[in-house]
Image 1 (cartoon, rainbow, N blue to C red):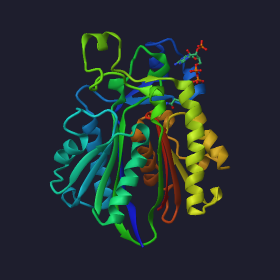
Image 2: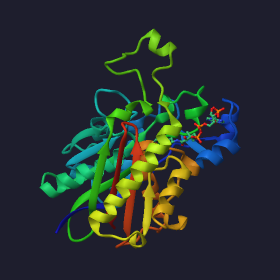
Image 3: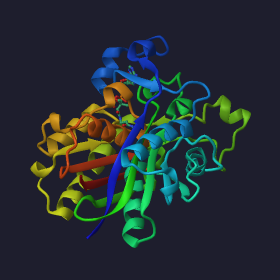
Image 4: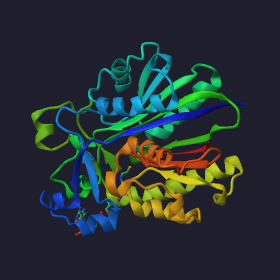
Length: 326
Ligand code: COA
């Protein structure tokens, strides 16, 4: 049986920390409000000149080292991001050049916070089809450059970072068992960046109206997220005929502690089985799952044969789940 197996992980977080107390000086908010409503205590922010591709490069290098693979051996690079350095070229191509991965095709995935699981699904399909054998999948974001630091409803939530996995063809039972992807474009305005694309290219007007920043209807997004995640997690369990108690670790997208706790509760799972990086990194969108996974791999929580459940939701709307036998 051919599987697409994660054989190496890596992550990178910029050094600069912004705490909730720091944010109290910027906008009308409090550590207490942010902690209670979100579970976030601090987030990392990229330095000036440090871009999404730089974060992706650091995480990617570590994942390659862990997989004992050279960049030249890669045949595909996928980057999930909604905050690329540039619209053109793609982050995939920029990363390919930085790594010197001359033999790899490269492209980006635009599925917001679900991008990493969308990437797992693409890698899984390509490997099973026999198209590629050695894939680097990176989730990388510099959300701080698209965050409105005058808007307290969003600026407390996001952070910068990158996480990467090497995915390889494996003749055996380990690897990605299933992925389930969903979208609902009719809810696009819950979470969006209005300008900077062909519809509203940059102009004095778009800048004056702060249209290049992330806008979110938080409460509606919250409700849509819980509904969507319940469904897609159930789908993963039923598809694989797996009972919740058989899951060894839940690696959720890190957006809000209350959403993560709600999912753990539905699965009747103690929080010890949930990988949580939200308090120190905030919501790093497509990077959040691979960053959390890398942490759990490196501190020994992920063991061979473990059953891992990933779940995510994000702008689009998009939502997704994956079940992985480690
Ligand atoms: N500090 C203090 N008060 C704040 C605040 C902040 N940072 N942000 C919002 N508020 C205020 C609001 O203005 C509102 O005040 P009002 O009642 O006087 O109008 C009040 O807090 C409640 O706002 P509401 O938006 O209803 O709060 P909430 O309980 O829904 O929590 C979020 C807000 C954003 C934390 C929550 O909705 C959330 O996490 N949503 C999901 C967002 C998400 O995950 N997005 C990413 C998708 S990948």
